[in-house]
Length: 161
Image (cartoon, rainbow, N blue to C red):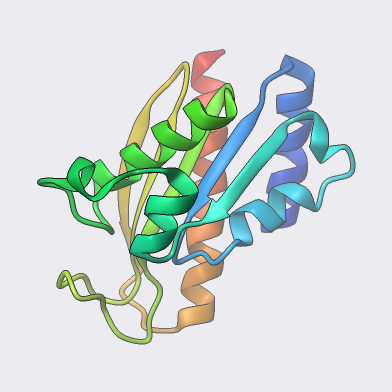
């Protein structure tokens, strides 16, 4: 299923339930938000998002100070949870969705290989996962990361019932 088809299904599900989502993404470069926003009527469920790609973006857009990062590094499950929780709280959304990783063609400064991402959903159901594609194709990884984020959100919404 394409990202746009998945986003259309997610949008219908969120609208039907009267639920909302806020997004924080990094190595997907905005593709998660773009997919969700491609659906007519997205303003009913999409409250906003940001590409939190650098430390200044984290500090200024998310409002997460350096000291809150003690013991946490980017591109990790704890960081994905922090971003999802922060964005959800800031926008008072039902769901927070976050992605953080290394799309390629090389790994990141933390030792993660290209194709590494951590995804988190917070809300009535909370889940965090790590995905490793094993590929250094930047664009392909960005699309895979976005699709995996949308899929994780769908799983959590369905689990909520």
